[in-house]
Image 1 (spheres, rainbow, N blue to C red):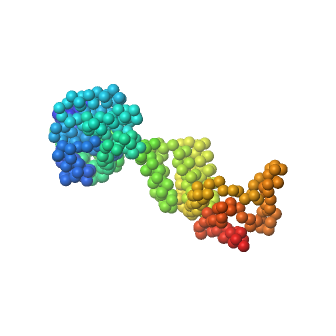
Image 2 (cartoon, rainbow, N blue to C red):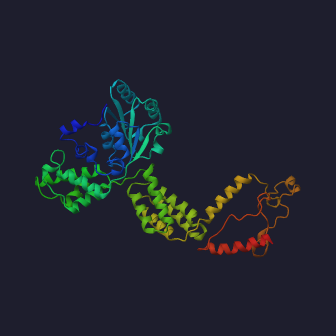
Image 3 (cartoon, one colour):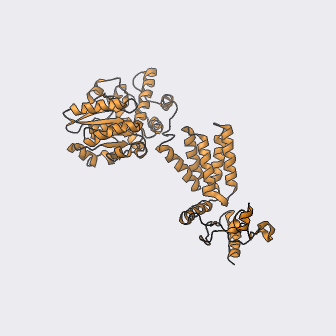
Length: 438
């Protein structure tokens, strides 16, 4: 049932991965997450008192979620049952609960990757968490608001872990290099600053990834030159292979990156927008998803200030559809830079919102007779189309008719800005509105 080795087992297993061997045994050994698990924090007080509520640990990979779960299990009168949601189903959950009922101590039921449990599996957990048969500790890289059922989530405290910063990762690496019992101290190798920076950059805030790369590079170096010496940047690069970016196509980080992309476009920052574009492409984002977002942006945030923006975005969408990757990234870059540098206006989008509010207030207001379609004799007798003036027969192709329902009255929904093409639109619209009022 317990898929993770105990502290004692980890000490006796020299073949366990370095990241597992170096897992802290005490809170004082943790690097990073000081605001969450440091001395004097609420979490430490709960552990010291033995009063641990059900908890969801939410954070990026390698930030210390599993380590925290094991440290929670060191609370007085506490034991651990551990499951991985990748492998566990309803049967395994029920077996863990039965074991907890027979145990003389309180049981922490640790479920790694709890976001992978389906609704039925989470529903099986709920009554046992409510009854206190088990204290749930779930670990997830996904936003629990999206992935954990509301009834179960409401019975848990959500603790958010942050990705480890460069300083914390460097301390993790230094400890592993010096540790003779669990780490790589016996290899007597040194890690120059350039090599350390390369590992930190590759790790992307993930301590497990950093230690995995350090272990692989050490094995390469030892295999070629034996113990001792320096871990060169070339060895680090050879061991690293292809860098994997933290990204999830349908979860929280997906929305974070696309949000940063759109907001950089809106801020007229082509450099930041290109960075997030490249990050999405490198992580395997569907290119047509990006092209669709550019289409939306062209109308929502640029609109009539630069009408060519929507034409360009439409052409780029078609180009990406026909080209695919890798060539499709080139028109995506063209659209990204054009839209970021274009004059911005959300006047049309804001006008639609005001129109929708108007419809919500007035419902199906009566359409003026002169605008109705006189498509039958009966309709014509009822006045449909009567007094309609065809604008193209008028000077300047404009007829100053009142076209809103009488219940709605005279309102100004579209308010063009003074930038780009909208400045001319505003000038024309002001004259037309004055003409209607006279």
